[in-house]
Image: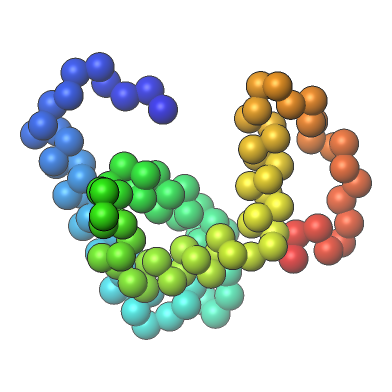
Length: 116
């Protein structure tokens, strides 16, 4: 991740607070349902996972996980990331991002059960 070379405390605090605010809105929404839209996982959930992942990376503190402040978001995030299909995609992603890997998309034959 390329971040600005100069650390601006006011900017850092502003954006950390904005991430907390937006995650709080999602927390309230997920307090009434399991998924962002409807009664099953949709593209909306998948589109929101990277935001949650980056927020978790940026705002975790030693001894305090960011998502622990948002139990409904944390449960939603764990529901998605515990799915076999999510784990498979993340494994493929790791292989593709590894500069020493010879893995290429399409080297495995997908099956109808690949992304369950």
